[in-house]
Image (cartoon, rainbow, N blue to C red; front, side):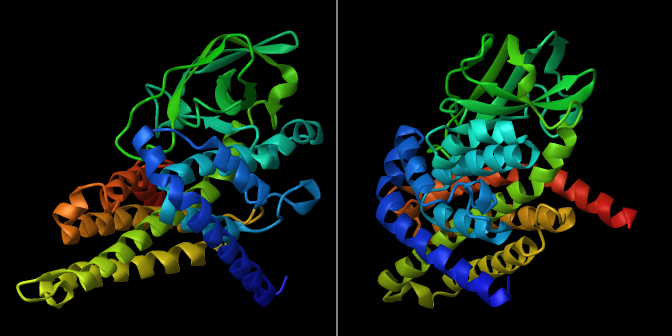
Length: 376
């Protein structure tokens, strides 16, 4: 595909998603943040637009697009509803994209149609109560018994945990990490109550609990001991999605700030004529543009066959903190109005903080980047 075609396709995608966000996403965003509920009906609408399988080849029912397309969707959705976008990311990237590239034709036939439609919600189980960044230290174990595997352990902070029907779960089989497809109905599997949290409240999370959970042998995703390969293959597009969410949140906060300082006066002149306010706006604009350039430039280098760990780590490391700073600036510029819920910037500040923690902490990115640079 020529670059011009790609960019035309990307432009059309952005137009489509932007219209959808204005008409369908924005009206419901505050309600779901306040209720701390995930809008599963809205996920089906996203599925009807063909936006769940954006990275899945057309032959298998996806849109056959690239990492840039995934970034556009996360950027535009998060401008309006970061919590819903996080649920979408957990479904479209952590489950669907992760699953697709490791699955057999039989597994694809069984799980893809409903997950691409958004009628079945997916999630991924990696983090545990005692183990986060130190993935290799996970304690969930699988033991082979005849034509089944028996899983024992717990996962926590699992986005979509309360709603999902199918999960990509990482567990240790003979001390090697293996990926299993776990359906909610399997005996010995359950989820905890919702875990209340600071931000991203329109997305839900819970623990996944495995008590002698019997998983059929056909539900191994990829091969025994191949869990790390699946995990690493998916991490880069996940980090790009999260970085794009940071960009969307920061763009929204900047737009709100600019609109507010245009309308508000203090000490007899427009608010935007005060030097302190100009610093917040000027710095925020520079951060937004730097995030945009970094995230989209890196996205152009990532595909199922091409890795750019250094770039995706850098994109998420920079964007996570920059978005939090822009949201904080917006709260400050709006003052009392910023601290109250009406303009939603307090929500974006709460939501933005997650990206410094989820999908790789900023400390993990700093470690990875240093390791990659010093190993060159």
